[in-house]
Every structure is written in C-alpha cells, then in structure tokens.
Length: 335
Image (tube, rainbow, N blue to C red; front, top):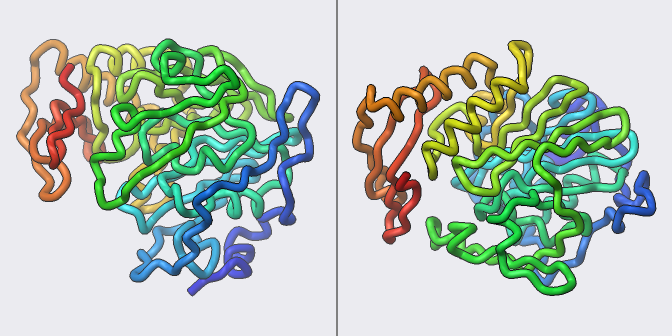
C-alpha cells in the first residue's frame, strides 16, 4: 500500500507544499479556495483497490484517488476504483492552477489531492455536465462553465447558483452510486474560443458538442497539449449527436497539429490515456463514413449497464457507440 509519502517519491518531487489556493489571484477573481460541503469525505478504504496502471500512485491510504505526474505543469488525478474510472487533469501556471473536471465522487474529497499538488488559486471547469465529471464541483469556490445556451438555460438563481438536473447529469445510469449534487455557484461564464492566461501558460477553451451540448476541450497552447474530456479517449466514445460530433471533430483538426498530445478522461488501462493526431483524424473519418451510410454498426449490450446500442469501429482502440439504451430505460444518443 502506497501512502502519500510514497506518492511524493513516485512523482519525483512533483508535489508542492500543502496549502490553500488563495495565492496568485487578482481582483477579478473570487477566492480560489475550497468550500466545506454537507457531505464529508467518505474516507473509508476501498475494499479491493485496483492495481494501478504504469505512472500512477495512490494518493493516500484509503486508495480512492491516484495521481500521475505527466509533466512539470500537468498532473492526472485518477478514480481507478469507481466504474467510470475518470481521469481529471490539473494544469499549473505561475498565477493560478486550472482543474479540468471534478470527478465522479460526490462523497470523496478531491480537494485534498489538489491542495497537495498546488498552492495557487484554483479554478475548476467541467468538460461537460455528466455526473462523473461534476461530483466535486461544490467543493470549489471558483467554478467556470461554458457560455452556451444549453448551460445558460439550466435552472439558475439570481446569485448564480446553477442546478444540474438528473436529465442533464445522467446519474441514473448508475443507481447504486446514488449521485447527488447541490446547486453550484458559477463564478464565470466562458465564451467559446476564449483564451485564458494562468501565468506562463495559455489555455484555449473550445466548445465541442457531440457527446453533450456543453462539452469543451482545453488546448494548452504553450505545451501543445489537448485535454479532450469525453470528446475523445482511447476506447468507447458515447455519441449523443452525430452531426455535432463530426463538426467538432473536424474543427479540432484545424486547431491542433501533428505534434499535439491528446489526453482523454477515461480508459487509463495502460497509463494516462494519451492519443495522437492520427486518432483524431480516424474519429473524423469514422463519423464521415457513418453520415455517408458507408458503414453499419454492430449490436452491443453490456449486462447490468447497456441494454442495447450500436458500435462502430474507429481504429484498434477507439469505437463509437450510438443509439444507446441503458439498463433502466435511460436513452442516450438518438441522432
């Protein structure tokens, strides 16, 4: 069992001193710290912790969170013992740190991991609004959403508290998880295409609907890294709207280049889920073939999870899943 001291060694000194996230903010920012929430950290050890893929180490003795140091300014935070196995990314600038996604865990405290990795002001932005990416949002004081109609039309109070309802977060696909999230205080609505300076690092926020209508990816212009959320990762991609997905995939190919490293939010079976420019090309090609009716999907089902759907091969690691009906009757992706 590897505890925090082991993590520090495993990451070759990558952890910074423990501390709050008040440093590095300016007058335009709300406090970049953490919010005490009604649901405390579960804190109980994972009964049967997963064997971690290369590059990851468990954060502490409860063995829920794991961390990998991707570079001096990028960490991957992993949930290996929850079914969705999310990968969350922390980008570290000299003036603030930017957390892309907040994980599935609504009863586990991701902020203790973030505090160990940065003492900066922390901004968090979800890649989209499905339950497994927003569980930790209420624990943060500086939460950004993409400024598009789908997100703006969510129930919102006058003081900026936004409710993500079950028909948006889809937590019902995993009834045993009993997902709950209180309203979230949104501190900034980010325009699609906006560039954010976090100090020595410029991030471009790109709207990429297709998997979900408020989906974004984050392009680190400084290091030529694209954090792709659920838009793309190296296994089964869940397609909500085929035309939107194709448009987003095609647009991204005009933004990134052959040397861009792409990191997804799932499928860390062999390490941090890294993809290439060619993978992005393959995804676009597959969507074009679907729209031209040149390929037929193969029927799929996953007992206890997906009742029915169609799968389309992209390449040796990526598939597209369409027309999904989850166990319990939840429908996803009918376009």
